[in-house]
Length: 147
Ligand code: DQA
Image (tube, rainbow, N blue to C red):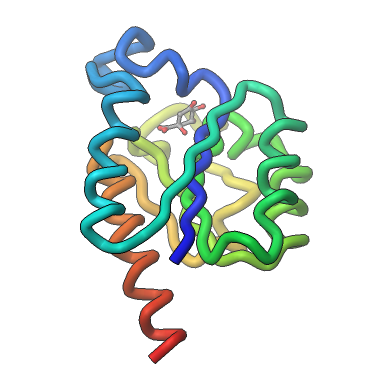
């Protein structure tokens, strides 16, 4: 099973960036922990982080017919990017949208997502744990398909 983890803009600043909102762990810490979890679940997980919308779109296109599942924290592109939505639809790979913070408890402009209605599910407000939940959900989803 192949899972692609995608983190969007400013998530490279985790640990430094508004730690009261996003926690004190770096993206590298988070990905390392998740990689251990993925190994345990027999999932081959790859990771891409970019601040550039086109790089995220390219990563999604490159996943076409190569990746079984996408876990994506699109950062602020959640609230702005029809292009990211279209990219995810274009590869028809099931995905879960993850946010560290509870976007619904924050500014109104964070309440709308261009991805949520086409996602398999959305996890928000659970901090780093949300990625782990998404990974378990991916595994469950994919095992249902092959059994
Ligand atoms: C975020 C929430 C977004 O609104 C914000 O722009 C981010 C991070 C989160 O993980 O909580 O960059 O996706």
